[in-house]
Length: 146
Ligand SMILES: [Zn+2]
Image (cartoon, rainbow, N blue to C red; front, top):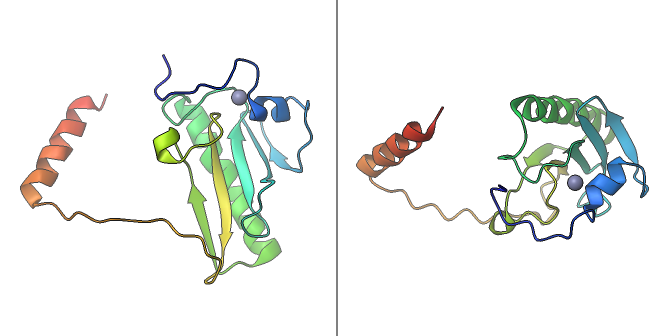
């Protein structure tokens, strides 16, 4: 059962079509489990997406090996992006679910070169709850760890 709503029609996944070569992509790197390619949106020059090759919608749907491979590929790409474009910062972004700002429901993460004046922003409304509530949240999550 999918963990988040994915209402895209079956067979219509744009990343599956891209990975399969049905639609073109500016490919950067691939290994057994992942493919890295240029984001057509290019928020900043050198903006790369790292996707798992198997169709899986979100972080909650990929295997531990796929998760590890995605981060290995992201690190390799980030090193190359730094060398090629020399951005002063790099942000990794990975979104899950529509409310998590995911727009393509096939697991991927962004390797995004950053500049001080690039207009990229993530609203971060801190709540700073009492320590006891943090402990309660932690205990609730620990019960679900397995
Ligand atoms: Zn897919």
